Length: 277
Image (cartoon, rainbow, N blue to C red; front, side, top):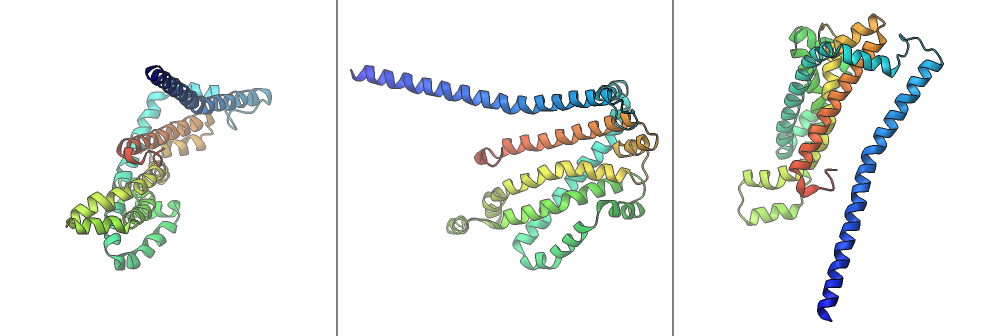
C-alpha cells in the first residue's frame, strides 16, 4: 500500500510539473507573439490609411515603399550605419568606464562627490544639440566629437546608478568581511561591486539606446556619412521613404544593442534572476 501511495504521489508531481511547464511555454509564446501581432496590425492599418486617403509619399510613405527602400538601398544603408555603430559603441564604452571609475571614487570619498557631482549634474542639464557644436569646435569634424557626445549622454545615468549601488550595501555584509579580515580589494569585488551589478546593468540598458541617439545627433553637425547625416540629406531632399528606412535601420541597431546588454545581464546576474528580467 505504501509503495502504491508513493507511486501515486510521484505521478501527481510529474503531472503538476508538466502542467506548469506547459502553462509557462504558453505564456512565453504569448509574450512573444502579441507584440508581433500588434506591430503587423499597425503596419496593415498604416498601409491601408495611405492608400485609402491617397497620402502623398513625401508626407507619409507606405510601409511597402519603406520596405522597398530597405531592400534596394540596403548596401548604402549599411555603409552609413557602420560609422554610427562605431561611434555609439566607443562612446558607450568610454562613457560607462569613466562613470564606473568616478563612481568608485565617490563611493570611497564622499568629499569628492560633494565637490564634483553638482558639476556632473550641470553638464548633464545642457541639451545634446547645444553640446554638439562645442565639441565639434574642440575636437574637429571627424568621429571624435560624435564619440564624445555618445560618451557624455551615457555618463550620467551610469554615474548615479553605480554610486548608489556601491554605497547601498548591507552593513552586516561589511561587518562580516571585516571579521573575516578581508582586504579592501576583496570587500570591493565580493560585496560592493557585486551589489552594484543590478544598478549598473539598469544604467547600461539605458545607455545602450542613448549612445546611438548621441552618435546620430552628433552627425547632424557637420558630417557627410552616418545615419544622422543620411537623415538630414533625406529630409532636405523630401525623400520620405529613405528617411523612414534610415530611421528603421537606426532603431533596429539600437534595439539590438539593448538586447545584447539585456542578454549579458541575464548571463552575469543569474543570482538576481527576478531583477534581470
